[in-house]
Length: 286
Image (tube, rainbow, N blue to C red):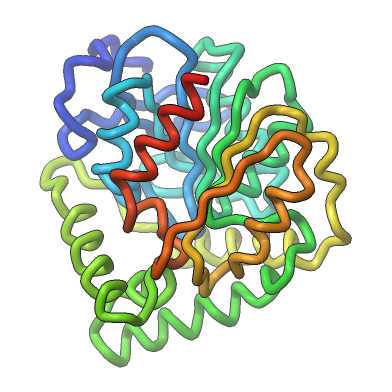
């Protein structure tokens, strides 16, 4: 059921209600805020993420100027169905979700795995995509992406042993600045107190790891097919998807610009959320 609450009535991502809409045989859970006009900006999540993993400062900042829509992938959080285990399947689901909402043109912001999904959508459904923001991600066959299972599982184990969140080491640098940024980020994503999303299941996490690993083991993709304007963003020291992938994307995409944040990692757009929001809104408005 597509609720009719006006998207602009919610004050922030921490309080906006979660809605559902039926598409491709499943009920997609999503949250939407910002003005009800203009080309919507659809957010595509990172590995193991639910709706509650988006930094509210980034979403609220973007929603000050744009209609912003975040959703849970199939079988993740409050979205029903069996989790997808390929990037292509996730891309098909995302397209079905966007079309079910009645949109025929959107901008995409894909973080990490979401950036892989965004690249596929830009090729399979080019008329649907106006502009792309690819953050903390890389091309198919990109350097080091095939190691994500090992890197991710090691961080999860380290987190269990040290009673800390794995995102601390996966998403941020180990400098004093990076550690502080990690603490601040974890506090921000805990700001939502009502209607929090269900955590990702082990089954869904494994399916996503398989999808990302497969992406990393492919032959190099032909990025010349992605002709939309692209903003590529990352931290200078990404431990999950090495930053050289962002540099590689910006060189190989026909119409791309690159922004790298100092003393920042995989979640550079969260750590430097003020600068990122300003840059992103300017890029989208151009």
